[in-house]
Length: 156
Length: 152
Image (cartoon, chains in turn red, yellow):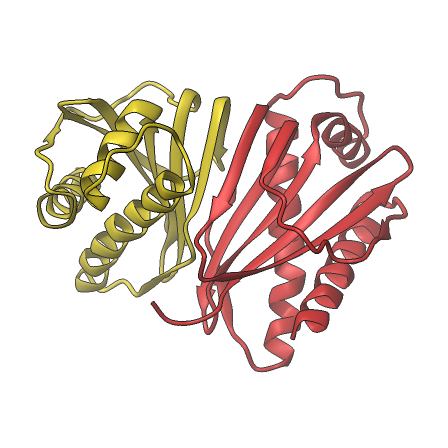
């Protein structure tokens, strides 16, 4: 399941970058440690429920968010504005959309909540203990970002 | 209007039965509240026949006093106990609101809660949602409960 999740994250993220951003992206090995603390970053978070419950989060440095937004919208971006927030929320939405399709092929049905975008100089994001974490780093020419998938592991 | 009533009923019940603290609901906050300083926010999504998020935003001081009351111990810093408790608080309030939505003929299920903590952060959601923010007052200060619902 772990390897499978990692592969689904990689496939869904690559598909979004290939088709929407036309930018090559390299994936790294899933991180062994949980990442909680983010500095000068922006995170798009999207919950889901159904046959499994969980949360997908897209974390990136603000600088990388400017590049992604600029590439998607075809313009220069140099501050955290509505365009950047919308884009990062939409990244979470599109990546989770791909994962949802992959889940469905295995007979697992999920529906998505609405994305939330957080940003700040320094913030921590935590979740409950009863969730598994899979965090995959991705590398662009000019920076990196994380895609994190948390799944509830047993019924509370 | 109905969302407001649901938030107030759900939150008040959780505080009465689980946290054992008296709270008073205020009038809905109309201005945009997306910037938080030295705060803790518990967030949980839900999906089904309608979808959205429920978020609870608390100054650190209020988050610590609620956690202390919930766990029956003194809390002096925002540690894992506090972030766990605030995530769980969002989960419990959302669970109550889910029951009301289900009774109203909707069928929703909850995602898992997350908790954000920081000196200064902003939280934004897609704009095309019905959004209600209710302030609650208690002895240690004020916190906000925010419900955003999108109906397809």
